[in-house]
Amino acid sequence: MSTMDSSSIYGVSVSTFFFFFFSFLLISTFPHSSSSTTTTTQINSNSILVALLDSHYTELAELVEKALLLHNLEQAVGTHNITIFAPRNQALERDLDPEFKRFLLEPRNLRSLQTLLMSHILPARISDHNFPATDRRHRTLSPDHHLNLATNPTSGKKTVDSAEILRPNDVLRPDGVIHGIDSLIVPRSVQEDFNRRRSLRAISAVLPEGAPQVDPRTNRLKKPAPVPAGAPPVLPIYDALAPGPSLAPAPAPGPGGPRHHFNGEKQVKDFIQTLVHYGGYNEMADILVNLTSLATEMGRLVSEGYVLTVLAPNDEAMAKLTTDQLSEPGAPEQIIYYHIIPEYQTEESMYNAVRRFGKVRYDTLRLHHKVVAQESDGSVKFGHADVSAYLFDPDIYTDGRISVQGIDGVLLPPEENDGDTPRTRTRTTTPLVKVAAKPRRGKLLELACNMVGAFGRVC
Image 1 (tube, one colour):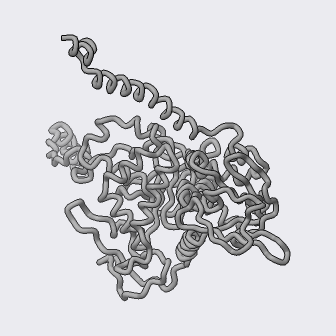
Image 2: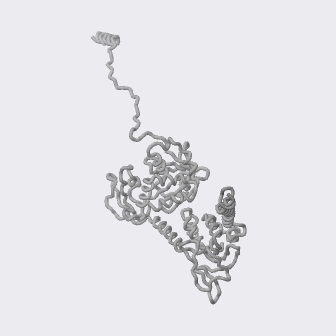
Image 3: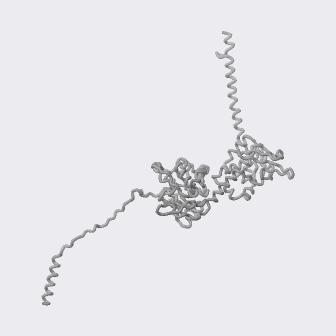
């Protein structure tokens, strides 16, 4: 009994007791170490990222905020030291091509802007004293881009690709360094993306030449003639629309055809992604994604050479739709069709039109229905008195083929009779009845007496 007491404590063996005791100590000390690792990733006021936002490189700091890169840079700073090559304000404000700057600031080109900015940041600390003397490639935070760092042996000037470092060690912090450079570094992928956008815009501006004649009886081409690249199709857009969900879409002549000169599917995906990045139009983007037949038809129309203007209601407007308005079969498609204009219109063109002509009626892809636009409070107002919407976010997406204009309401066409059962007008006309006049006996007797009296006097 005594041996049992010496080898156990309250019925538990000594080895088991010490095992649980040390396990409790390890578990109690482990959370403190994990919390200390999480706090090291927080950004303090002495960080290089805070210094960049408060520095004299205001143009670069503004682009970083517009590119939504603050979270990514915080993770990069928390992981390792970084080196930022910051272009001076003049390089981004005056020396930069205005068309290229407009390309970077468009919401649909957010990925290109992020690639451009991340290509100016190295995931390593390279200060002035340890700058490489020979040409050396360094990877950047952009995975597909590298920078060549070199020092001129004769002049001692330090260069980063084609840019020259004007202010080495301009900002020094424990987690990074900022060097001021004289120009912007443009990666090849961003330049190629910009060239594709510019070439597409140039192609879409080509005027049609030698349009063939259309037979009004058959609505077909009399003599098939080649259509130059960029020219709009000869037939109206309604001939290219799919007649119904069960029928195949009708082919339309144009620069697209089987060769697909314009990549309509890519452009439709591009503007849907732009709506998501822009914010406030998620409901419209969800409808276009779920209605795959509608998105496919829009892409096919653009591939065939047609142009479209989409009046996109924002999320607040889409939330006001009732279940009755969406319960009927095909109701979402019909609502979206009423918001698509088969023309290429921008904010400037529509505002100039309503200022000049008062009310402008645009055709829509919902057949036989037009949307009315007029000037109101310095903006463009769509719809009629009961259901109207204002141009709220202009030029969300404009690429020469598709134009997306944000509005603050859902447009519904005025109620009309169903076209299959036309209303018959009832005319209240008096029937033509032939009434036989009855002889009046007194008048005839008086006339006969007068004639007999006149005859007697003559005799």
